[in-house]
Structures are given as structure tokens and as C-alpha cells.
Picture 1 (cartoon, rainbow, N blue to C red):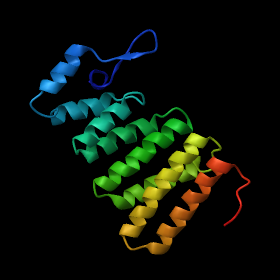
Picture 2 (cartoon, rainbow, N blue to C red):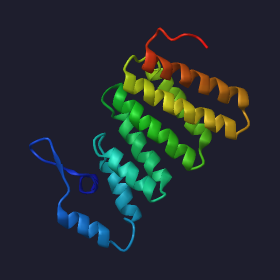
Picture 3 (cartoon, rainbow, N blue to C red):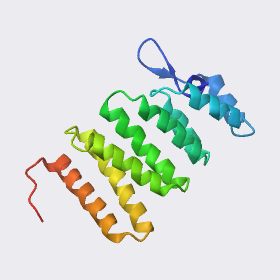
Length: 168
């Protein structure tokens, strides 16, 4: 099922969405059924999970998005994929009202990927820490929020300027 929601992979490495699929989806009178979402989660791979998760988020189904991102992050290949899906999962957790779990999820990402020198991973970790800070701020935990924001800022500065960042 996830493959029918995601673009189709051609032999040339390009992706195609066939006209009939676009027309069929545009003419659909309603969102996919709950059974279809469960099937999409069950069959999701790290490749198709982003498409399924974005579709669930657009439909306001943050619990479904969180589950598919959880599946994808657990089967991710490398820190880049893991950070992408874990960041998306933390956002979905927050949007579904499970902010404490979002904070824990971000911390797991920081523990695993926080020392990565890959700029893309560092940016994803920083983005997740900004979310973590916002969640702390919403809960009235100002000092925890400031610590998250400062750590994210420091990490982003090293992405932009390397380790030779002047202290402000």
C-alpha cells in the first residue's frame, strides 16, 4: 500500500506519478480509510515513510504520522535518515499532544547523532533541539528552553562557520 501512495521508482533512478493516479486521488471523495493508513504503516520502508508521514500530517493524523516515522527511524540506514525521521517523529508527537515523548525522542537523537560532523545531520539535530526548547517553553520550563536554544545555536554556528566560531 505504501508503494501506491509514494512515487513509483523507474529503472532510470527517476520517480514517476502516473496521470491516472493523480486524477484518481484528486477525485477521491474522502481521505484514505483507517485500514489503509494501518496498511501503509505496516508496509512502510525508510524510503516510503516520508511520503506516508507527510500525507498523514496533511490529513491531521499526527498519531499515524508518528507511528510511520517511528518505523522508519528504527530501520533507518545511517545517521542522516535516522535524524530526518526522528525529527519528524518528534514534531508529530508534539502535534498529537505527547510533548514529553517529543522531548525524550529529541534527546535520543542528540545522544545518537549529536557529535556528528555531517552538516545535514547537525542541522536536523539543531532543528529538533529548537522544537525541544519550544516544548519546554510552552510548559513554563524557561531555563530548559534556553539551554536547548543555546545548544541548537552553537551547533548551527559550527555548521555555518566551523569550529572557529568567535564567542559572543
